[in-house]
Image (cartoon, rainbow over all chains, first blue to last red; front, side):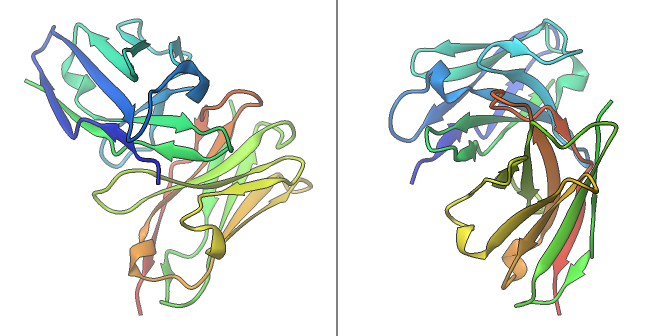
Amino acid sequence: QTVVTQEPSFSVSPGGTVTLTCGLSSGSVSSTYYPSWYQQTPGQAPRTLIYSTDTRSSGVPDRFSGSILGNKAALTITGAQADDESDYYCVLYMGNGIVIFGGGTKLTVL
Amino acid sequence: QVQLQESGPGLVKPSETLSLTCTVSSGSISSYYWSWIRQPPGKGLEWIGYIYYSGSTNYNPSLKSRVTISLDTSNNHFSLRLSSVTAADTAVYYCAREPPRGRYFDYWGQGTLVTVSS
């Protein structure tokens, strides 16, 4: 069974830069998996940040960026702000149409 | 602005069938994929499955035997049925839209909590 892996938690200082990653239990993530990233605060529906590896969704600040780093997809937040403190989920699309969410990363800004 | 709204019972008894509807407003159901996603309390998101406007479906293998997603284009809504529920199916259930060839979710409903309990 394929598992999408994310760091359970991460911490960043205000104004700092943080890179969250999204990997596969077996194999490498590439753009063919159409990695996307979602931000979720408690009690709210997820918000779409990045899709197709590196395309920002409408209205998303350019301090959020997506890429492939090595064998993983990555979400980089440059100049972290207090309201970036959220859970972040990556999603990968398998070749058979199956969609898999990562376990999520809880980001703390302090 | 497309809006999605989940509706259905907030409490379902064990072994019964969970049924939810997602109503799409300010947009057509045609030409998109429509998904259901859930999130158990305090846990991560899990994709349940999708239906394409043509009626074709794809389900999470771990839920496939219990899931049915259907579409009502005339009323602009789609539905989820999950049979033989247990407490492990207690979750916030979200509906979401995926644009054609998009491979991502661009619009989400606000979510609805379904509790499985006798």
